[in-house]
Length: 457
View 1 (tube, rainbow, N blue to C red):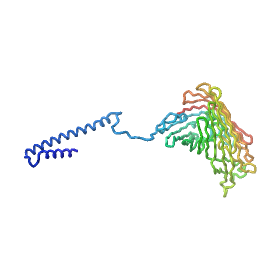
View 2: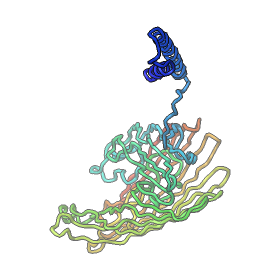
View 3: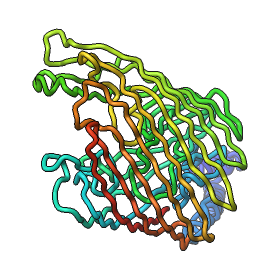
View 4: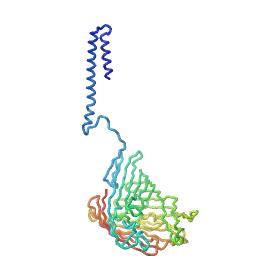
């Protein structure tokens, strides 16, 4: 820029004076004038440049003052909300994605007056109570102290706006590993968009809202309870009612019974054979009075022998069931939780105990009938004090080909007093009782006191 200005000034001076007609003195005078003009223009250019850079430098030196350049634009930047429980989440702003962190820290201090399979010592599970001793897992002296943090859990729930609607996801786990260790146990691995859902969550055949207000981990033996991988569609839903259908992961719980007594090696070869997914359907309605849910299931359960050349004997049987559950609001804030389930080959969906298939007459495969029920009363003593008392059973109609030690009936009961000093803190004492009865009538009980403290976030 400076070179262009100097050249223009010299050219203007030469044109104005008539170069060929001028004397040396006149040329020298005009050249001096041109140089002076160039110096003056250079000073002005520098002043203009200083004025341009000064505001930017001042902004950079002053905290909280943005530079004159436009800020970068971000799209779909997540807004993280920490400290909000997922079940209390409000609908997020439509233009923003949202991530929530939730969970609980929980310690159970348990004194078991009798005994339990060590892998399940941190909870009361009737099917794991040792009956035939010695020989069963958990046999030994009565009385045992257990401290457990296995009910502690962590979860992430997200809300992601898309052009098709709001995508919701839920990923959560607790520490109740199936091998008795304090290890990750996945609960929900779920995503849904509008009417459609995929992943692992509560079965469409169950009703989590009838689970009583207790602190023992496992819960009533006579209720349907399973978190199942599934494809779900809810074609109709409003504020009070909904209808849902799902294809769920199949599983065949087998009892080889007297076949294993006759030929242990042959009986050891039997495994489940699942060629079709389970089909479940449910209808739910609710109001100020409480809620009611009716669920049904249709499934194919199968078996095969992997130790024979042709994998026979093999075959399939049809399983089916009906689950009726609900809650009823009664006096003040008190509530009754109740449920009844009946079916054949549905033990895979029960909270505890039983099998789907077992040998019948002539050692031919038969579906095993299940009946389950629960009844609990939840009482509010004061705003921060509550109690729950109730009973549950899972009963199986044993087949002729099952052995004397097959699961016949699992019974379960609770009574507690719980205190909530703050919204996210709960503590209390609970008495838990369980009983396992076998096909031949032998039985054993287990009972315990559990003191727990839970902090949710």
